[in-house]
Image (cartoon, rainbow, N blue to C red; front, side, top):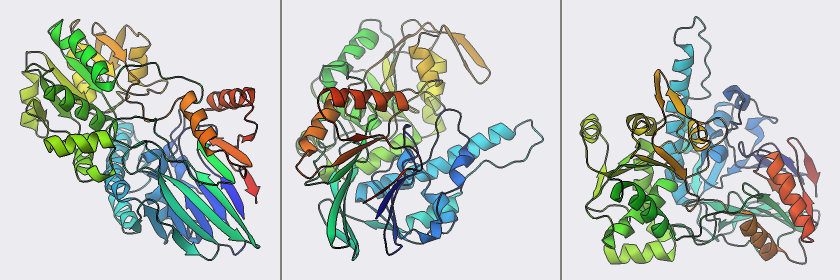
Length: 462
């Protein structure tokens, strides 16, 4: 059996790992979009294998860097089954259709005013629909036998709703090998999602390393952290708090936290608006799967009957709602996407408030280099969004309290908890080159010496 790495190697995006067996069966773990800085979208349109020969895809979770190239592989002839959890199936439907919309919008923008008619769209809604028809729903902890050589089990990864780690069990040539794929892990004691589970008795581990070189800074509870920002903006300055949040996972964690603050009487009549089509869709999916959430969320749901809705909250869904929001004068809170302030409705709210010294822009997640969110956090004195230009007078800050990945210490704890007498090697993926190399050096300093850093195209024979 061979394990081949075809994505998220010394980079974060494009997760895709191939298991190839002696009987020529082929199983893919994730099929994500690669969109590193400088990459062209069409880099995703070619595969280093024949898509029609892939027997099945095991999808760890819904995020586009893990799922976003599934419609492309279907377009090119994949006919097998896609295995994932129930929440992942519901979330990925919204995310893939949104991906189509984004691709067409970007393509239209690039063509505008140019003679070139080159299409840079990978797939259409038709391919998304076909992809969804391949999905088979799998519960956590149920061992699924694919063939005589291969079975797998989902374990909870934390990270976002429905996210799974994959314990792959291979039986070939009279021996059994267990390979664990973490997928994306969550940090312990997160809002909404459960803590990551340890996969038992693994021989090899393919481990994410997103934040392998950093420590989370925020030591507050989520409620205290958000309340502090509300006090600084809405209460002390009578200004507005604009929260830039990812649509899936982050928006729901923030709305849940604001609901908790409302129940504690901390909002004092301050209105809250959520303005993101995908965020609203994802929140409705979350409402269907409270049984997949952690004890804090389940207990709150039992007591109050609703995790995300409260009287102060207004969901922006229509053009009339948008216009009504534009005429709001009193202090208020907006939760909007995209989280990196690259496109989406958040840009409208930044435009409306960036010139106002009593407005407060809170970036609630990671912002890649070159994104508008990153530029704001770096202290850029003016911004340009399309034809709009303005000096930056609003206060801009960030928080990592809602981070959906463990930091270095969290990853070390996960690795130590995973260590057993059978563990032979850990492959570090899903992190940039500098991060992964720094994390490997740190692990070796603490005598964890079973580390390998694969590059794209590397294959390992077991």
